[in-house]
Image (cartoon, rainbow over the protein chains, first blue to last red):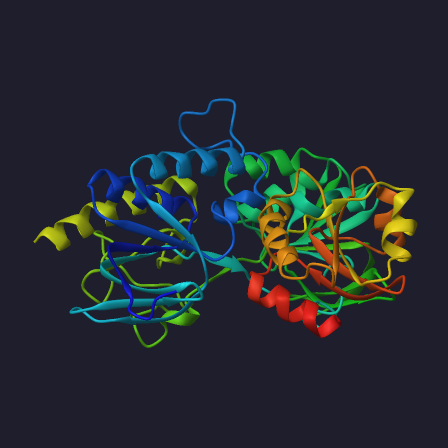
Length: 308
Length: 107
């Protein structure tokens, strides 16, 4: 590892669909492009077994296959990939330095695509029983709850998708939602309401997760009647939203009230030459298609910025 | 270079529980995305512990009894065994540096 930072045209932080799509475009623009990923290329969509809404795949496609193809495509056009964690960034309109566990890099433009992670609920028992009945991934853990009763906490697309996924295994799925209607898209709602094993507990929040070695109960409170009840369950699937991974960007880029990066329609952030794409961008709709679109827009504008 | 070994049912006791050195067991399944993310990280980690820690994998689909014996309800779970006893477990994907820290603490 050399001490002087390596020079690149573009550094892309994050290897999900947004970063990969940006890499396809910057590679084709013949810009010297480096993608830095801390885990494995693909990102959160790897947790999704089957995507039904990505255009061009009428039968659907797995998150794994889709992102693997995107990575092959970007690599073909010259994108370099480094598996490392970003430890620090220094970004001004004049210069950009990205420090990682595998060396430091300067770039003429930076595309931030580091995504988001599952929000924790923050109730007693949650941390204690993670992996012992509390789960953040129904695709991964559903099979451990065969013929068991589980709850899904949340009411958005992710929550309802998980509830439907769990019908393959669980005997009873109770969706606990704090409002009196779901946010999930209509087609998912229709599927959920048609499924006899899915029940929705409206206006309700989880107060506490209880158990011995493993989870066996959740304490639930109705926010309107204030009544408390206890459900006998073996699993608690958390699906209450996402938190942008912007910890390393505080005080550098302008963020919104949930910590997502504020960017304009060109994906430009508060620092010129720095772009934000995908789930990490304020008001992202958190879809693979929009992440890919963001990546393309940022890449085209970054190219103009560099050559400008 | 040490590669994690795949463990099938009957071999678990002999290989993991009776091991003279600590064993890190990666409980996984082919249909689990985060397990595929953890896999190369564990492979890399294994290289740094040659002869000091054994690395093993248990496919929970093929070995449900081992998984349930150790209360595995989420995958990936990495469990460290010392003298036949589980001494530490890590649930979900973690970057390599964090895994290394957890493993060193367990040793």
